[in-house]
Image 1: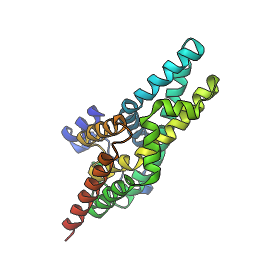
Image 2: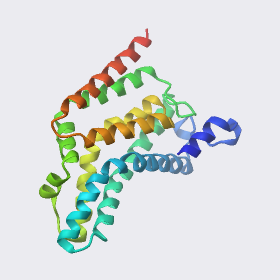
Image 3: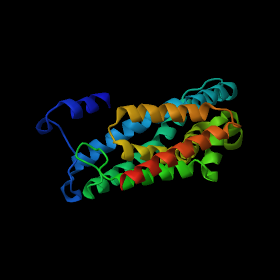
Image 4: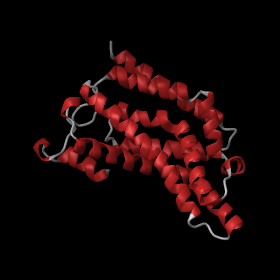
Length: 229
């Protein structure tokens, strides 16, 4: 991702790949490149925050089976599979945004109203019951294992899918922020990753910090709305 960012900021436009500005001009190669970009981004952003759960699952497997392989690998792959499927959705959204000229050829935001809407949606979602329920499971690996344990290899895979969906329910709105700040914005990518990691590592009773982040996102979006005037 860093190399791709370097290409887009240092190479002449004639020497780099850029997504077509019209939906009709997209070829399969364009979809593949954008999808791989999102898939790598999702793995890089979400795996660090899942390591506490993976470690807890590994320890549970060692106690139950006497070893953690291949169960931990199946759990982790299933978790990533959820985010790889979500990357298809993000790719299709980006495809349409280029067609509407909401994203530039450099994958930067061209629509202040869209950016404001994304920040406000992300902020409001911080207060939702679904967000809080998913975040609670992410913060309590032991509780997740007790409530969703499945035996065997197929069970490990299904648990990874379940946890991936819980994690998706917690963080999908934060992923959309990349469309507001620029898809290839490495600084934003790192900051969002650190925020997600911080948010999931807090004790369950620290909901005030989640709400503060929601207020911040809403204020950021509202500030962008004032720029429209």
